[in-house]
Length: 387
Image 1: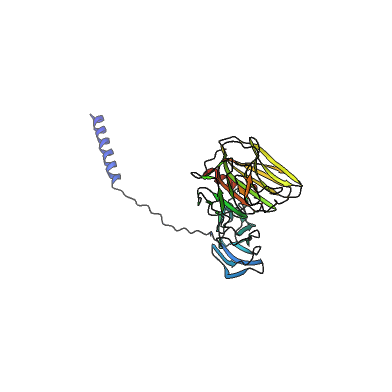
Image 2 (image 1 turned 45 degrees about the vertical axis):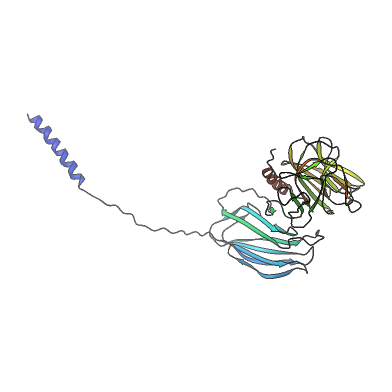
């Protein structure tokens, strides 16, 4: 009997304890403040004129304000140039590093922009400053008034916090609105844009439109029959050069030309039997550089360069270089540059290409490997080319 009573009593006590705890209440509060003691503040602080040709007129005072820098100039003669030095300052308390640089030049490629002293991976410690140069020039190779006389540079530099990370330095590449390298671009032809049965329009802004003779405009390409089709440009003779094209050979015509100005001189993209190479007239005869095999009915983007004793060819993102020797000779008889044939003089041709040409470009300088790969990557996307 006692045992049972005890058990019941304990049970009641347990119930009482539970009820008792349930009526207690405690509110815990945390009050505090926090402040960011560090500051992120990277700005342009100065624009200085380093040098200026006599034909350059500064139309507005250069302004450096916050994250924007502006300058406006007018050019009078081809070859005129001005160099500005821009100061960027880390006014904050956090170290910084350049993560990305994007330079885009629009409108006329007769006006060229070059950025020097600014690379991805450059570090800018807190309270320190750095400088870089922007050179603006009127292309010295221009021989006629360009269609577009205004050039605009958009430079976008991205800094991120420097946490000791490694970012591979790379050269700054200035591109146009099409994503193609703009510096030195003399003629740019894309059969998807402003092309007709009579005229292949120059997208560079320099007004060197192609005169279509026989080639047939297809869906984003010109078809060349291998007999007498050609697209004539202007005389385009430069001591250093880059020639680029996107093409598809349907039938091999031995010694055909994709983009060339041969006539006892000159240079071009040359197609021997089942291959492709650059042909350059050096030391009294043609030198053939960087021969590579290609296949019929396959699309390629190809770039060839000549600069003094060096020639480079890149095809579908793979490049090779060759040392060449001899004095460059320009073509005879006012020979023009032509697409799809080898011009002879200003209005005759031979060495006809048999296939499709989608795009062609002519530069008055040898592009760097990085610049070529930029163009080829864009071509491979635009024209659905695989390696």
